[in-house]
Image (cartoon, rainbow, N blue to C red; front, side, top):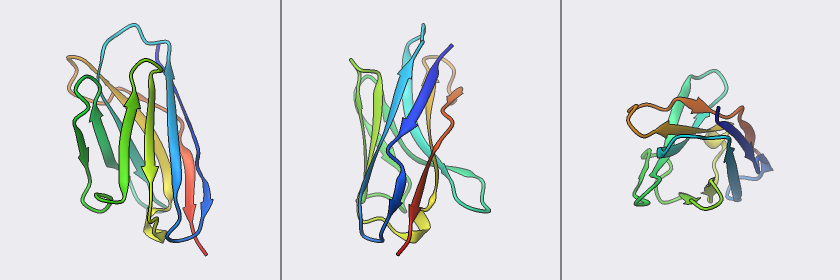
Length: 119
């Protein structure tokens, strides 16, 4: 079974930056996509950014495009989210997720890392 462990969250001032990491291990399947999701206080979990594990193509929700950058290190089975120009509305628990080849969905999830943007 896959294990996903997020790290890098914390408290940051508006306009600041954080880099989240997600280390994946224990997989016996091929990864199609990995992505970042977030759950803000009082809201449902929503998509933030995704990356094709093979070709590196990316997709971002409009609210983070130009501020966040998703990347991956295939050899290390690690996913990253560089978050710049953070805003209070970015405050959320951030989760990484894996979509295995052939499923068409994100089947595996980490436990999340808290990002708080506040002055």
